[in-house]
Length: 218
Ligand SMILES: Cc1cc2nc3c(=O)[nH]c(=O)nc-3n(C[C@H](O)[C@H](O)[C@H](O)COP(=O)(O)O)c2cc1C
Image (cartoon, rainbow, N blue to C red; front, side, top):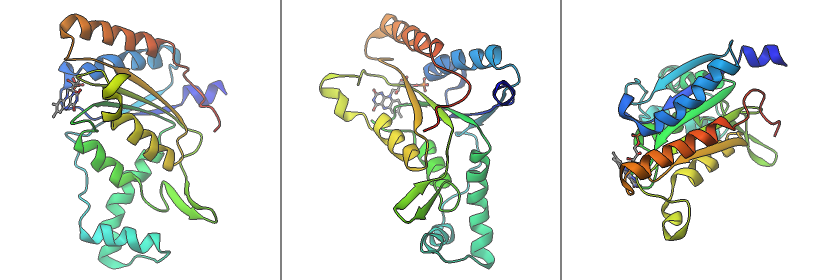
């Protein structure tokens, strides 16, 4: 067990372009510090979505997805084009654990994260059609999603405006990730610097209590 944890691969997917200024990353850094300390053999790979060269979903790649979803096979140029998309999904699958760092943008996720999700949710890679309909293929992996929002959407009338948590839970659940924990830092802008610092500290405290290592087998 321990051997596996020590060689764990963590993929950190960063969906903010703000680098050192990012509030979200201040919270994620607390988790990464714990990984370094508690799982010394763990390998951390970082994917900066705002500087990554992600393939576009052009017409051939989209048509390829329809062909695969209807049980067909790909050939020639379409296969070549789809290979570039599938490579992103296969790379995603190499990780044992995921950390997503994302702010809220216009009540949802930044477009670069949506682009990445549209690339990795592919038939035969992260899901397939079985007897009972679609079935996720990403099994036995843990995901931590660190978010930050300018306002506070945790309760009250603003709760229904939040399209970050519900969407990510749905889409990653669809591909099989059930062990998914959210750490939300909020409000980052609406309550001034004091409110922001307090919310970041609370989120860091929540991170310090998260279980690391083997995911729950769900
Ligand atoms: C393009 C853009 C859209 C945003 N939309 C929202 C929003 O809809 N609701 C909200 O509460 N905050 C919104 N914010 C504020 C960010 O969610 C907030 O400042 C967050 O802490 C930024 O995280 P970061 O520092 O890690 O990039 C937006 C910020 C930007 C740049």
